[in-house]
Length: 151
Image 1 (cartoon, rainbow, N blue to C red):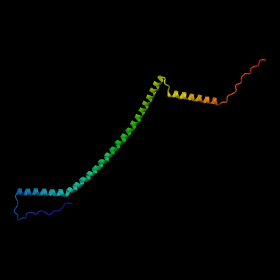
Image 2 (image 1 turned 135 degrees about the vertical axis):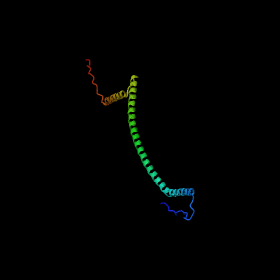
Image 3 (image 1 turned 90 degrees about the horizontal axis):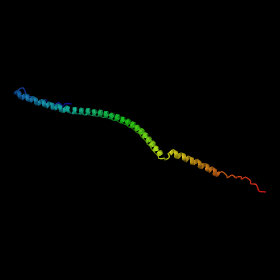
Image 4 (image 1 turned 180 degrees about the vertical axis):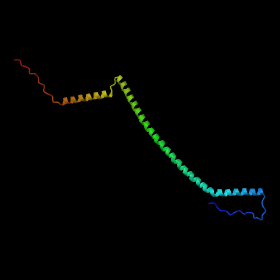
């Protein structure tokens, strides 16, 4: 609220009128003082209004920035997942290519493959089982043909 001030003392009617330049400079001086008084009274209100406007603007920009950050994070997460899937698919293909080339090179060198070793292991196991069955079976008496006695 503007403070009311008492009106300045005005020269009385009996006082001698001032010269026009003196009067003009006096008016300018009083106008400056009035402007300063008005700025002081309304300056605080204007300052508080600017603070409120600045706070509202700050909140609005922070919210917008947070939205942009969330969108960017979501997009980057999606891109990272896609990249991960593509990379794992390419690594799998590369791994299979490497395994195939190594297997061909080993075959050319005459080194048996894992399936060859497994097949041989199975055959050995089968032969051991048959041998164990043969060893457990009772020995059958072998009948010899009767020989004729000389008479």
